[in-house]
Image (cartoon, protein in one colour):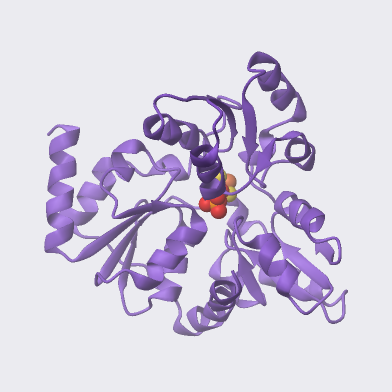
Length: 303
Ligand code: 13P
Ligand code: SF4
């Protein structure tokens, strides 16, 4: 079976089974081509709430499928690859977070959406990289315990000087591998290019960049910019995606090693197999689901 034939068969089966395919922009081109919707974490969570189909297949990582299930508990939700987790989502335990919170009376806990449902259940509100600063600004508390990404947290702190953010530890192993040296080298090689980075990068890389934003923010920046060359400081599939969308412009990955193995765990045959043979839908404890939901609902109301 060719890739094209497999894609056509997937499109046919998803209609027949009333299934919606959501794909994060970090997925491969073969997968994004068969998705009903492609977007960043925030855009996907909005679609998870409104998709009219009776079941949803999330092509991404586990916390994204959990977010879909939390927002649409009545639907059957599938994760494209059972081993696709986000290492950052599991770096902290709810016990660590609750113990830390005790240190700052009156503080609110803000959880990056890249967290397990257990962590969301002990947080006051969730954020994505595109909505984090906006939401933190709106919170009534001055003291904020921001989990788990210290790099995104440092970026939010810089955007919200009136708040006092507190951190535990944590971060994305892919984005935090980028160094200022990588950024300076890329700028020296492509002096006319704008440097666009994700806020999961280290603060010194963020400070050096021409633009910092989520996956969707980076894509929108390119769409609006009259410039024709860009260095992309996020997972390499974003540079690849932009190359397909804007063939007249040039995109240089900030580092060739910027690949998230978990996001890349999903293949087109995985999607085909789930549709053809079926799979176990995601199961979540209803009480946990309910507790985690408050945190995501607050994000959608404030973001
Ligand atoms: P966004 O989709 O919010 O840009 O986050 C990037 C990411 O690392 C997803 O896991
Ligand atoms: Fe997690 Fe980083 Fe991969 Fe995103 S890129 S899924 S934050 S490990």
